[in-house]
Image (cartoon, rainbow, N blue to C red; front, side, top):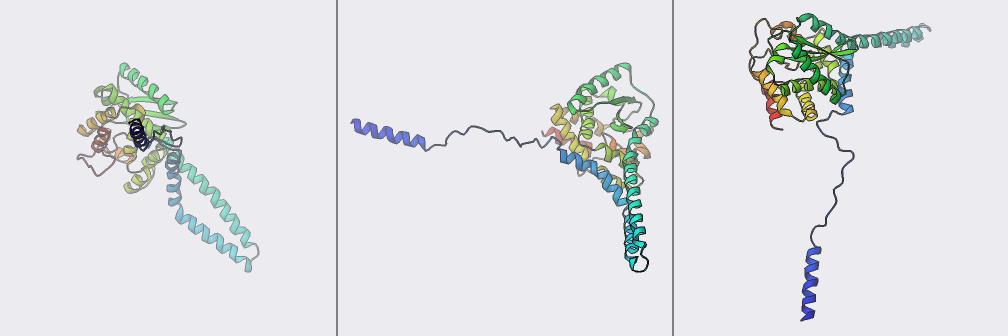
Amino acid sequence: MATKQRSRARRSNQSRDRGPRYVAPVLDPTWQSPYAPTTAEKHANQKVVRSFALRKKLPQTILIGIVSLALVAGVVAVPWLPVLGVLVAVVYAWDLRRALVRYEEKGLLLGNLIFDQFKAGGTATDRLRLTTVLDRLAATFGVDAVTTYIVSDSGYNAALVPKGAGLSFFVTDAVMRDFELIELEGVVAHCLARHRLGLLSRESVAAVATTNDEARRALAGAGTAYRADEVAAAAIRYPLGIAGALHKCARQVLAGDSFFSSSTYAQWRWIWFDIWSDQKATDLSNLDDVELRALALEEW
């Protein structure tokens, strides 16, 4: 009897041993949230302006290259021609570098241009409220030296814009009047997320560059507002705040005298929170459409 009991106990232990063993969880030190901007992503956005400028100068570059090669090949006829060819190439390379820097610096003028388009708006309470929100979020996003402006306009919009060595944040008094605190926080976070993603340079240059609308859109980057929403929502941990702001933007009806109904806005649209505020119909095929962006955030 005792032998049978020992046999059954042995079989029971063997049965339990066949079960899955406990494995302690191990954190992956290389894991990174998909909603956090990477260094590579930021650098890629920052290089877009230089690539755009190089494409604009490409015909001249090809011409100078042909001339320089022809001069170098002329050594058979005239011994000093290669020296001239190298000199032409060096001078052009120096001028090209200066041209690229000038292109990047164009965007730094946008803050002053926007400032000249508006009259001051808002109350002392609005300014205190905005400063409080911006100061708190600036620390979260690692941004400093931001000057705030509340401008008078009936449209809902805001923008963080390069202005010389610093940054300027513009927001309409309509936003300050009609948006809840959590919605205002979402708008500010979205604009700071664009800076964190390295988007401000390409968006501001797209606004001031002499080119067509299609090229502006390519330079600014389609879908960049959608991406900034993701980064902002992950940082503030409340996507519904941004979604609420976007829904209000989608429902607004712009007055005819609003800046956001003007041709100047159409050129500068890429730097603003609501890129398509002059669009009267929702376009759910466009990643930067405010209604689509709001719906995406509500699914988080």
